[in-house]
Image (cartoon, rainbow, N blue to C red; front, side):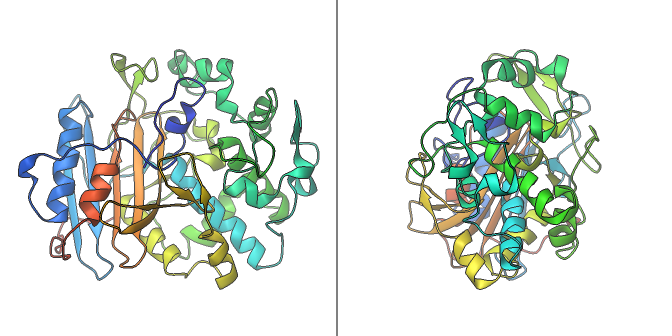
Length: 395
């Protein structure tokens, strides 16, 4: 459930973000009938297709866990990937940011129908953009029409595409990213369409800071990471390092070229994603967050209803709520989730609407073909017998 690459103007959807579907990968015929075995077959296929390494885990909500891995964490040493490693989660960050905004609404500190102009005067203006006509809700469900800053060709070339290695440590400010988006016209009038735009979540992070008087990072930490004991999750701020334990992250340059040269992209400045996609986490932490979110433990009932009120997206029948998307699978099972990509990493977090079964996976190469086959293997069909106690260290 990650956005396909539609050329430079859309590539940030793969770099930092996720829409919700991709072309189906085929698991090997001998992958086995159990859902865990099916996921294993899919991640092995990814490695055969050229991804250095993939990790995945399925939890059934009753304490039973399946974990699998394929390939390597380090191309130089051949070190295997580990289930408890940390990795960059890209646009899964958006799910946590949306929850913080909804918590603030539940506390009466903002309203989803507030305009962007109310909280960020003058920030959304120029070339047809008008923050006075755009609501906070429209930021969170991608219906504002605000242009994605990565659709700017100069930005793409310099920070994502051909010149990424030269500029990988450049520090962006949220204001500079929004200003970049204002250089071009909106995609459509507010509320009149759907378009995945990272700019919307940069603005959401800025609104969090304006409402609370604290940094977006601090609000995520105090509201989510601390209470949920997500000890392996962090926000990089100015750090360019990937905290351990972790493997290496690999990217292809130029971006989107199947024949591109593979480079180590483990160290980078993630400020190009900020509240749209800069966080670092683990499989265990993402399972914990997904279960708490869909069980209604993070939001009041009214805000939980807002979270799961969806609009049609442009991605193969998927519907987007507030920072999380819903997709019905081939077997009729509905799953909620988000995917995320950033240079060197592609991640997915999914949870079944009814059963609470969850899947988290990560590839240490952002050119991974996609996760739809793994999602189908994890949730369709089976009786749950594939999950088993796992003795390896947890995240």
